[in-house]
Image (cartoon, rainbow, N blue to C red; front, side, top):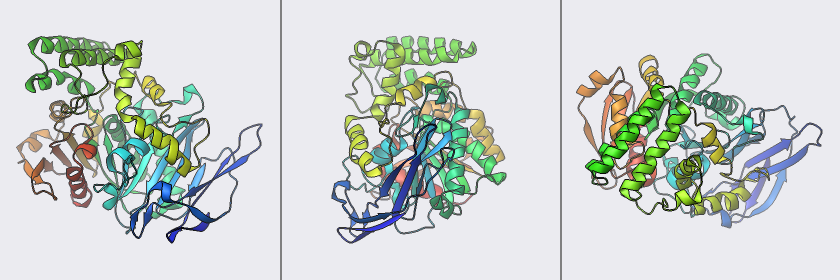
Length: 485
């Protein structure tokens, strides 16, 4: 660890040491200095941080150690965990600046291939935005935050060989369980958070991962393999039943005047072909057909934004010319919004310099496309059965929330799979209540709860709820983490 002093009289307490030792190579040491972005006067910009004195003590880890990086005390900590041979997962922890007893929230991004530490952190709910300005709706105001670049290959996480990528959600869950075991059982920061309520929040494909992860984590906690106070999960605009979501695109677009009857007929024809692929068990072909349906949506709407139907200007024009295969076109359509030029420049510039542990060969987001490609066979498979299991057989709080303006995982499709849950007949009878924005006192959402299951309908928001309606998202988070069953 190290200690030191910054201009502005801000103490620094974080220190990390990374040891890399390969077979036939001399071990080398890479020391990373973690600097809190919080001072008594507020949040400091990275460019204003200057280390005055630093004293570092390094400890050697063998190449077999899964702990490649460890942090000492402080408000932030980041590290790599080797979850499998040649598969390295990055996480970034922000501790609440004023309390050690607030809940811990793990945030998982979608894609697959999106970066939690990048997009989720700087574009949605972290303490700073992509311009390194304070975010007044940061979830750090009510909880500590753990961002994990997941699956391996997303964000700053990376693999050393192509066969180390994940190919299904079970592999993703196993990798995350390895990371969480390491975090809660081996790192001091994790040990300090073992007894605070722990929740997983997510978005898009991150919801599919969260369902599978929650299933294995809940069992691991019961078996005393992981010591944490796992309380619940919140599935935001989540890819739980891909076919149900896709089957509602045409009706939703028609209702909102974005297509006519001709477009409706063409898109629904594509959905019928998708259903046939699924019936045949041709899951890879199903993913390809899903991309074909997207092409039809783009054609008949003139380029609607899949993530928010009121936001236009998405660079769909020219996709067919820039990317020569359907897979490339689909991959870029899904991942480009999560890798904007400003965010990419930030992560590969100031953030990379701050972290000091990113290997030279790793560029933020460089492996994201391959993450998506490797998950093609698993992408369209539903996980409704896992969500149902979590509701019926655990004491976890299970929350579903959906943005009103989302197309790709729209509310109608989400409601369709929710209607298949065992709890639904009784849930249907529960009265839905409005929820007012704590800042404006205007209705911003509707909610319904029965036992351990809740549904939030978020207004004025698309796929990225924390980005589109930050006040309402934060109010929802407060309700979830502070309510009791």
